[in-house]
Structure formats: C-alpha cells, structure tokens
Image (cartoon, rainbow, N blue to C red; front, side, top):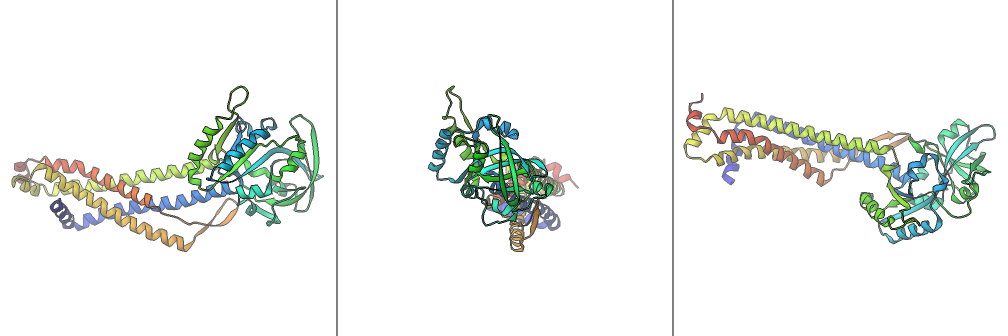
Length: 414
C-alpha cells in the first residue's frame, strides 16, 4: 500500500499545474462551506438567543388547545391551580431546568384618557420572569432598567407608546373582560417602554401577575402558560420529548391529556428564518460536493487519457487491474485529503481573525450585536470526510476505465 501511495503522489507531482488547480478548487469549496457554517451558525444562535432569552423561554407549557387559539388569548383555557402545582413539581425535580415563569396572558383596552387601543398583556412575577428570560430588561428603551416593574405599574410596547404618545410616569387605564363576561377597569402607571420587535409579540406589555388576576377578577391562581428556560438549549428536543411523555399521564375526568408542550420554534415566526439558514447550509454542501466531483473527475479523466501508453506498459509488465484501479483511486484520495486539510486550516485561521475583529451588526431594532463565529471540530470533520469520499467516488469511473484497458490497444495509442 505504501508503494501505491508513493507512486500516486509522484504522479500528482508530475502534473503540478493541474494538481494545484484541482486542489485549489477543493480548498475554496471547503473554506467557503466552513466559513458559511460558522458565521450562519453564529447568527442563528444569536437570533434564537434573543428570542428565547427576551420573551419566549426555550419552551412553554399550556393547556391542550390553548396555542391553536392563542390569537384570542382565551381565558377559558387557562391551567387550573392543582395542575400548575403538578407541573411545577415536575420542573423542580429536573436538574436540566434553570428557571420557569408562570404567566397570565390577556387582552385589554389601553387608554391614555384621550385615545384608546388594544394591547396584549403578560401578567408575570418579575423575579421569575427575569430568571426565565434574562434579556427582557435589555428591551426597556425608556424608564428604569434596573427594576422591571412592581404592583400598579406596567411596561408597554414601543408601538403603543409612540401611537398614543405615552411616556414613563404617565397614568393610563386598562379595561379587560373576564371569562364570565364582566368588565373591569384599573388605573396603572407606565413604568417603562419596551423595544419593538417583529411578529406577534410586537403589542405585548407586562404587568404584575397579581394585578392581572385582579383586573380579570380571578378567584383562584390559574395561569395561561409556563415559560421554561433550560441550562443547555441544545437538549431542547430531548427535554420536550420527555415532558410530552410525562404530560400524557396528567389526564382529565374523560381520560384525555390536558397539557401540551411547545418549543420556541413552534411559537415564533423566526423559526422560519432558522430553517432557511439550515436550508442554505444544505445548498452550500451540495455545491461543495458538485465542485469536488467535477474537479476530481475532470483531472482523473485527463490523467487516464494522457497516460494510456503508460497504463498499457505497466499492464504488459504484469501489473494486475486491481492495482491500477487502486493507483488511480489513491490519486483521487490524495487530492481530497490535501484539499480538505488546506481548506480546514484556512477556515480556522479566518474564523480566528473574525473572532478577534469582533464585527458588529444590527438585528431588528437591536444594534451592536457582535458576530462571534465558531467552528466546531465536528463541522470540520464532516466537511473533510465529505470531500474525501466524493473525491474517491469521482475517481472510480476513470480508475475503472484505466484498469480495464487492453495492453496491446493502449501501447498502440499515439
């Protein structure tokens, strides 16, 4: 095998320009793919982090059917206190759960005593909410950022603050209808204004959970949802799967499951952007495979054509077809290895430079977000293996043709 490797390497060096160009194409493909994976992965992780850490949590628990009707924020589908106790017991027993926040969601009419509009409100415990969504305070663009809010105060979205010209410290009135149909109104003071975001959370405000229950005249401590934060977001799918299994055991009198679990990707339209990034990554990988396949197959076909007499000579000397086959496949293998190795090294160097440069960009209304690309060993390994395998596959047809040449016909070739 060592002899075949030496001969294959020597043959590649005999045609330096062709070998260099082929290796360069493979290197460019590997570098482009790894850089795209690292930068897009960094952007995706940052985007998901902004969404989960500022408003959604990593997953949420609701009464069955609530999410399908969430646009109307149905109060009749809230979780009952005894069910909430069981869920919180489950959450407290798991070591992979960092924090959770029970919420009461409601729709209300918001008035500055001159104009009126509708608003979506989240009644939460401020301390628990910050633990579950630690980036929420950073969304406050006006008001006291040190203290989220307290009883009798609310945080309102920027959209409403601008539309009704309301500022922190202003008095407003909220009017809401409870599930029995009765209307109640309470005066509040605006504690702060939240940065506007795209999607269904653009009109969401925050108030104390006890104020929400008072506004809705709730007689018990029922809630709309529980937002949960994980210690390791990468374990999201596994945790949801386990919770689905556990929730299936909580049934009503009819023997049907009463609760369901939804990951952040089922609750936010930004999941579509994340899916697009994954799809673009797949396309980049397909392009890399195409570049390697065409490049290696082209150089190997040319190598076979230019060395027909040489192939005929070694065949006439008694070299077995299998050995000739291995020789040409080894040449393709070496091209793949060299291209993958050089491309990986260049990618690591560029990623390191990008990390040190700390390029910043804006996402939505947030500016100054630092792009910090990371290149995992797994990504380098997968890209390298992919390139090497494709290079070998591209060598098969030319190698097979070379190994099956008739020595007499080959020696007559001019």
